Image (cartoon, rainbow, N blue to C red; front, side, top):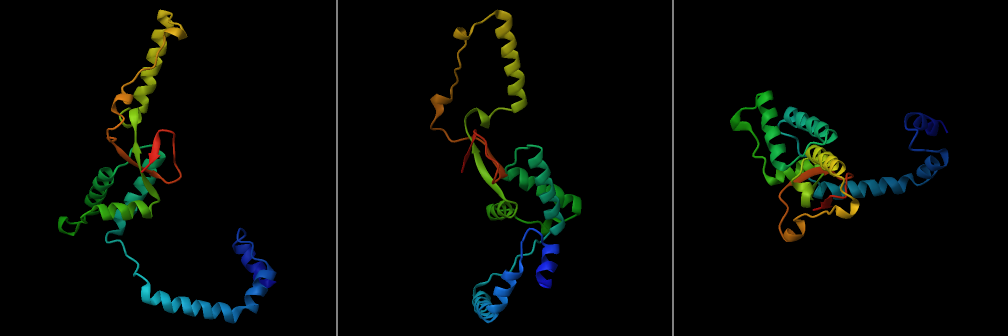
Length: 185
């Protein structure tokens, strides 16, 4: 009971109760044997944890990415690489000690930070949201001033003519973020 109370006060969301601890104690020999077997196997196959070569630069880039995502800034692999070099300059990393920042580095960085690459299709790939909003208001103003009716208003664009073309821009987003204009890669 004391053990359950102790951990319940430290980890209230884990919900460790006395019956669970009792069952663990009853099967202690089995759990220890399983742990030793797993540990023995993992020693043969485990990879050594990779340490970041320039932790200060990586930390600065991590913080910048989280801020950029919160501000809705378009992130691409090129942007991330450029920011890494900018932060390396700030920290004073000599040119001969800088990372190569290959596609492998980018893949590792995205995985570590929970980022996923998305392709932007259609008008979303070429339009600035602020500009679109301003132009939409301008069109509404013209419609009202000229007295156009709904029967006189048509929506036409050229995207149907270019359905086979590859998208022009890529962006990175947290895996949980999805909008109707983004399709997973």
